[in-house]
Length: 106
Image (cartoon, rainbow, N blue to C red; front, side, top):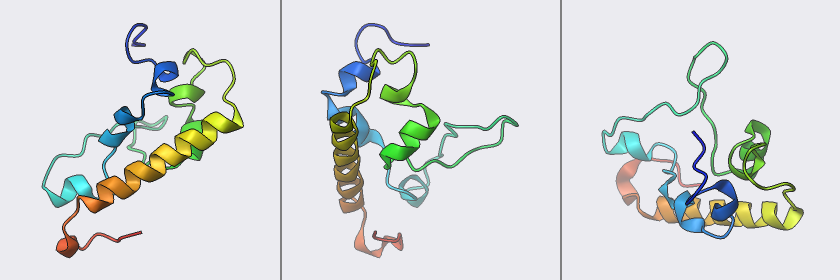
């Protein structure tokens, strides 16, 4: 269901805070939190997506790239902004991990 009032993909272009909920790879498992399967393929099998990469959003038509996002054209400046935010999210979430977590620090 598309939220047509408060938090649309178009609004999120000016609100980076929503992206900070994206966990670092392996973060949820580290704390024994169930990892909800958010994406599935045509066979209903789980699909791992790197949501810290703007190209994933573009290839899968997520967020601002979705045809019903309210964004008619995603400009190069918008794509650069999105990747910058995703990079910051990745670094922020990585910084929350304990040093002895065993997770790869990229």
